[in-house]
Length: 346
Image (cartoon, rainbow, N blue to C red; front, side, top):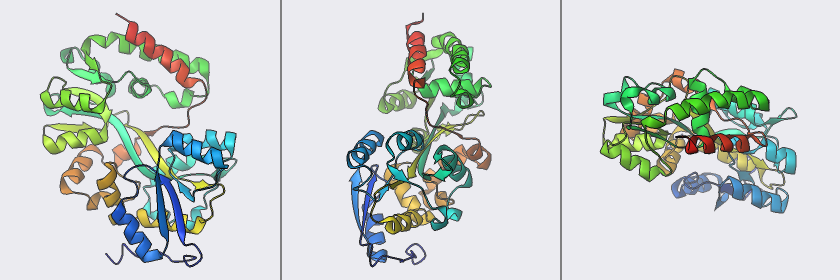
């Protein structure tokens, strides 16, 4: 435990408080208590979500908090429009603790005017949850449309399904984000594929509990869904598991970002370096249900979750994750029309 508590105390005498705005589970009580004990810094936690973080920081012009945790695709547009954050000084972060592919993806998606505004904190993916009896034939999103799976599959009619099917069809939707005509042509192909696939769909799931129930009973044998749901089912039934599709799981990352008028930057960097330690990060995973970007933290989670994680992600699968970039204005309107047409098609 001594190694876990080894945190640099630079500036802690002057920096007595860290005001953190974050998601549920990202700052567990026991982790906060140990950080406070080891640094002398009092941590004030405000639970939030992307929209609420933006709203609170806009209302104050970027003050009131020292560290925030927006998703990586909610930083650049917000910064360009409202100037709520200050650049990250990567020299103050122990980047050796962070998964390189996630650090690279977050730097690329949060860079503006040559400044980086976010580093990775907690991540998750959507991919495939499968029963073992169909796992051999379901290796990618489009495999859900194989004829012998008719009536046995499920996915949401939401933008991740469009994105996932595009990648499985050999397209790169993220590369087309800034060319509306190209993106619409790409989505037209995906639209037809999903219309052709409708006969296979038991139901378009809308809530996680609904989907998990369908998978538990075997009414649905394969589905596009989140990794955490797959690992939960695997803990109940080893014949159900989450797999990363061949074309790549779709990944989201919640970051660490510095509000522009934060008063305690040093404490923010200390918190980042503290919670990225593998043993500490594993406790955040236990509380939040998602893994962090801490390299090697999977070795410290429960054996059941560790085995499920390792079954889902080898190093190649991790490096093949397709991380969501910022969404250009107007794109979701285009996608919404496509989804409506799929829903209405016979």
